[in-house]
Structures are given as structure tokens and as C-alpha cells.
Amino acid sequence: MKNAKDYLSEANALVERVSVEEGIELHKSKAAIFIDVRDSSAVADSGTIDGALRIPRGFMEFAADPESPFYNAQLSRDATIILVCGAGGQAALAGKTMKEMGYENVRNIGGFPDWRDAGGDTEAA
Image 1: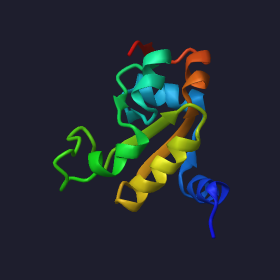
Image 2: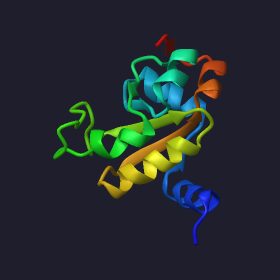
Image 3: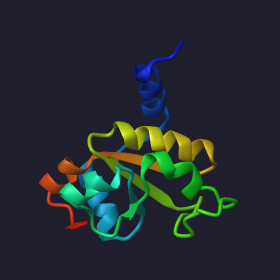
Image 4: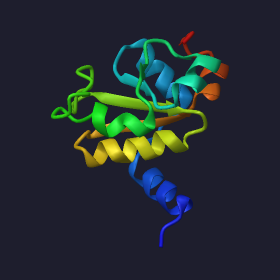
């Protein structure tokens, strides 16, 4: 039987973790799609990465599926996608889901507080 630690270990092994500094460079060059996978109340409390899509982890399968009526047309399986959450766990799990759905270049930048503290561009909810 699997536990939460098992799921997280699998996700972390599959989804590359990138540094905040690398993420900031990708953001500045507009070379990636950023997605905040936290729920709306967490984003409302802290803000998010400037221009990030807001797709809660529990909704990712619907937003990432082109056959779903809830598909987010801003997503592309060919794009570099950078996921962020509160500390990195939800981003890793969402990234694993996206990889299983055919998104090749998905990365986990970790927690939004790290982004904000490193001086990454932010926006209010």
C-alpha cells in the first residue's frame, strides 16, 4: 500500500526541480508558462508569480486535457511549463500528472515564498 511519501517520492523523481534563479531567468525571457497550483484562497493570501496561470492541483487533469470542456487553451504540450505551489509538493504531484498526460517539459520551481523572497516578479490575486 502506498502512502503520501511514496507518491511524493515518485513525483520528485519524475519532475525536475529547478532553482528559483533559473525560474526567474525563464520568466524574464518569457521562455516558459508558469502555473500556480495552489487553491484560490492561498493565492489570494500571498499573490502569485506575475502572469502565472492559476490552475489548482485538483483541477489539473481537466485543464490539461484538450478533450475536456475545461481545457485551458494557454497550455501546450510543447511548451516549457514551470509549476509552483506553497512548498513544492503539490507542484511535483501536478507535474507528474502533466507528464503522464503527455506534457514533456514540466518542471517544479518549489514554493511561492522562495520566488517572492528571491525577488521574482509577483502580482496580487
